[in-house]
Image 1 (spheres, protein in one colour):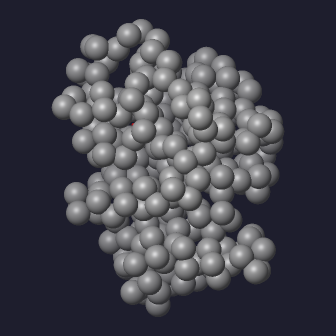
Image 2 (tube, protein in one colour):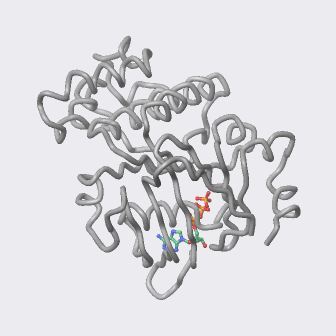
Length: 246
Ligand SMILES: Nc1ncnc2c1ncn2[C@@H]1O[C@H](COP(=O)(O)OP(=O)(O)OP(=O)(O)O)[C@@H](O)[C@H]1O
């Protein structure tokens, strides 16, 4: 397998021999990965490859094994809320990441409630600067927002604790291409702020536009890795798998 690594940046997230399982069925096996502070790594793979399960195992919502560190400290085996408190944020794929009967402002407050009171205002300003659409809709019920706006709100809520690492499961899914640009700009800003992002995706053009590096997961195993430039011009995942240096 090709190994591409950014030696100049410290790894915010590092996994060794990561597994994910449901009952006795192991759906992800032996995954090694690193994401540096300020880096965005895209996790590619077809339906059922195990992307969501791997992210869930790292977040602690799916049973997982292996070594996992955040800023050099082990978080393996810790409950999801402790991992979150240590700086690992997770936005799962499914809709329902926001509270539909609460306003945008109230949802954001929920995200902010576990950060120190003195940090809340600057964090809120940062989130609203990144997603100005949310600032215009603070009093709207979250359930009335478009899919793209709900995705931005879910990300905004996840940023409320000033995480070090953000795991995102298929953020582009079902969204209009116009939203892609807004998400890409937000990711650029977050990288500049030193966040480490691991983003599961199936949309290759979107992935190519946001990634520093990519990993390809097939049947629960990493089969390829590379730099984002290698994703340009690849118009389907099958082509990528066929060229994979397994
Ligand atoms: N709650 C569950 N219980 C049992 N098996 C599951 C569960 N969730 C997922 N699986 C199985 O785990 C495997 C990996 O699924 P997973 O959702 O992680 O893949 P994925 O790459 O994220 O695909 P998708 O993009 O379709 O979500 C699949 O075989 C799936 O059927």
